[in-house]
Image (spheres, rainbow, N blue to C red):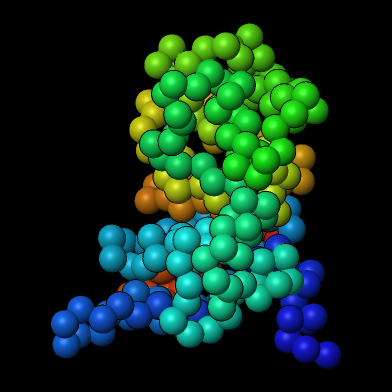
Length: 242
């Protein structure tokens, strides 16, 4: 049995992943032999100091970059050597992105922003519009479909971003400091929404610098100098995954 076939039960898995950058005569090992396995329905948080490799790992997980060495599996498929077009397909179909800055298009309404992922795949139609409306309702914005981002609060904009990340029915959600631009009350609302999504079976990977936020996940992967320093279990039901 091939290595790829033995890994089809994981949503995502990094095996011996390295990412090096050459800067003049110096080689920076941003990631250095990272092994992380993400199971279906799991809520993983990633932490580490500035320069620990969080951003590089985020780019690898989101198929925005490729490993220098090692393998990265998404849904059992080795994507570590795919070309740009193939990686774009993986991003568009298998990963839902949630950004700190929301990344909404200011000229578009809530409904139109939700349809953007499917627009680029040529899949916008009456059925997808109904799905967008249903997701807006799911995140509490059913009455704001015709509003533009400038007419929404920061928390509402992030709710749109979360709904948008679900439009493709992705294998997992990848959130980068998803509450970094929000006040504490709104932050809690967004974190509770992520908790609800996991309870519904969604797989979530959240990069954060806040330990209290990290503790909401099932496991926290701590990075240091491009390596996995330790993995902390936050929820006893996932003890077997450490």
